[in-house]
Amino acid sequence: MQVLKTPDARFEGLKEFDFASHYSKITTADGTLLCVHHLDEGPRDGELILCMHGQPSWSYLYRKMIPLLTEAGYRVIAPDLIGFGKSDKPSSTDDYTYQAHVDWMTAWLEGLDLMDITLMCQDWGGLIGLRLAGEHTHRFKRLVIANTTLPGSDMITDEMSEALGQMYASLPDVTAADVQAQFAAGSLGAFLYWIKYCADAPDLSVRDVFGLLSNMKDEAVLDGYEAPFPDEGYLAGVRKFPTLVPILPAGKPDRLKGDAAWASLEASDLPVLTAFSDSDAVSRGGEQRFINRLKNVKNVTIKGGGHFLQDDQPESLSAEIIKFMRGL
Image (cartoon, rainbow, N blue to C red; front, side, top):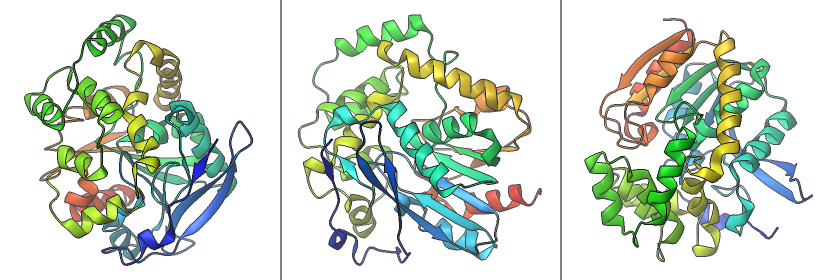
């Protein structure tokens, strides 16, 4: 496995990002050592909130929420997934699988021996974080689920997966405009366009991704999100993530593992807060599966938020998390 590390100079002077870095080493299945970066802010004895990001962001996504949560007395840990942020980046898309991401973050979680965790997860932070919670329920105390999902057989049947595979095989070359139009129309095939665009677009950039999934215009903030990726060589994780959502036939083993995580979470008594935004074309309506299947669910809608609601509405989301943790 060839591994890249983003030069530290890329992270100097980023807007609103003045946090100390912490690093841990994990060992992959092939014996490669990987470095995982995380933020660790707030009182050491405060209740722990684990904030997990998705594609194509990194712990920078939580920069506005961290001060609000630590001021309320909580300890906040925000890791960068492998391939993102200040964490190491395997250079080949072949190095990234759904299971590898779960294994990498399991090794990191166990290495730090984190317990009594309130999980805050969004996008791929949910696909990975909810697997962690389902497979290591004893480490978790609460779940905050926002603009994400946990794939399983109830969401994508084998028949649906076969049909989606046929649709995917017939797609033409996909442009950013095609993806935007599909999401805007609420097309059932929109995510297939997203997969193909991220996998094949010759000039993919993180700015493109944010342009498609948000209304973010602040160039300094976009610089922050793009900082971990100096050139195409660092984008393997970004390109691969959409393909790893297990909706195509090859994803059946991951759907079955999702089923097992669902069963564990359904059997648990973990309090759950679903906090989806009102303007996310990607996860629209996704909270209903959690409301229907899990116990002890409180549901709120974060108004004025898009896919990256941590950046769009940090005050509203943080306030809801604080109320939830205080039992209000």
